[in-house]
Length: 163
Image 1 (cartoon, helix red, strand yellow):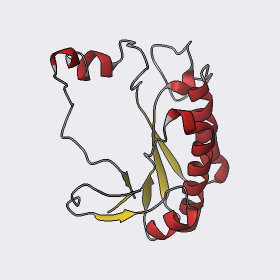
Image 2 (cartoon, rainbow, N blue to C red):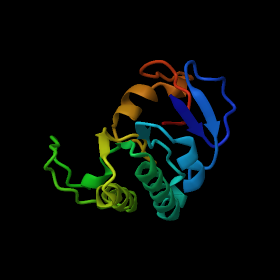
Image 3 (tube, rainbow, N blue to C red):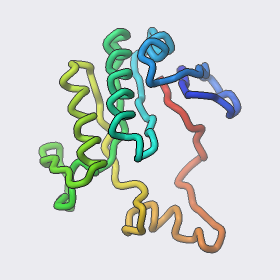
Image 4 (spheres, helix red, strand yellow):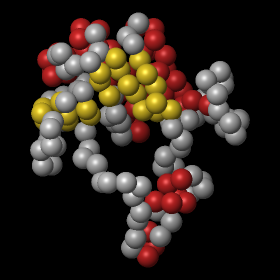
């Protein structure tokens, strides 16, 4: 396994080769992912930079996967479904994004199948909002932050992108 990040400062991941580089540079990412069977694209640029950064990052990952033949796995949330999202989601549930973030995610997600790169989307719930919304983060992870406590559901992971 190779772990790719922009600038590793954490200890070496056991059993992983750590590679530093710019994921927005398709040439650098392609070299780092040579011979990989799967690429997990889990980088998330800051929200204010999304409109340009997500397009460049998506193109870089698509170029890399096209050269390597790797399957791309992209963890994603539910922004694509919009404000009228039903309680139960199915694969056939229509994407009707109603926010800027939702529209940008939808645009990015459509780019992968259009490129013919084999892609697996790992859809999970909402993460963090600017205001408390009753999501799992508010209710479980940060509900005691005012008392100086947070709860993390599992071992603390090392940040980065795995390929």
